[in-house]
Image 1 (cartoon, helix red, strand yellow):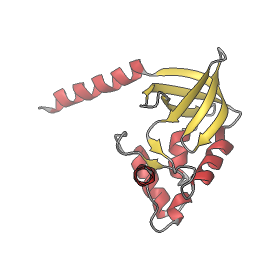
Image 2 (image 1 turned 90 degrees about the horizontal axis):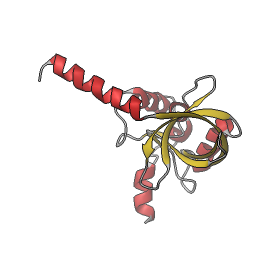
Image 3 (image 1 turned 180 degrees about the vertical axis):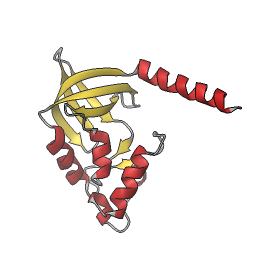
Image 4 (image 1 turned 90 degrees about the vertical axis):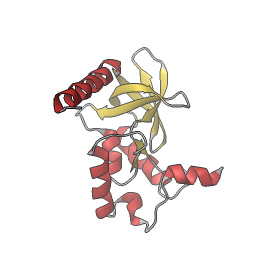
Length: 158
């Protein structure tokens, strides 16, 4: 495969993602944990949103409550812009969440050390680099010597 072919394929993938993404302004009415919120749309419909690309500690897990508090402090009761890209296997809408001043909340959670880069579902270096910086700075959950990723913790809980 030549470089021109690779570039064309990459552009088609990006274009398909942009075309399939749905943007809307909503008000955050609930924060369930560090990566799940409820929002109220302009048509007064409540949606459950899973922050795309990240995985925060479960509430019963170390730093789970702190992750929820951090997310709540940033967006609870505020109007946010969602870029919805699909649904997860629980039926929640997957979204990138932005404040009105364009702060990318999903990324902020990783930068603060309250969420992992959910590498199973992400591509690129944005979340990876943010996680590496949070680890190096021992921020949030990275204060623990051996934090357990939520996807591993969930397996142990079953």
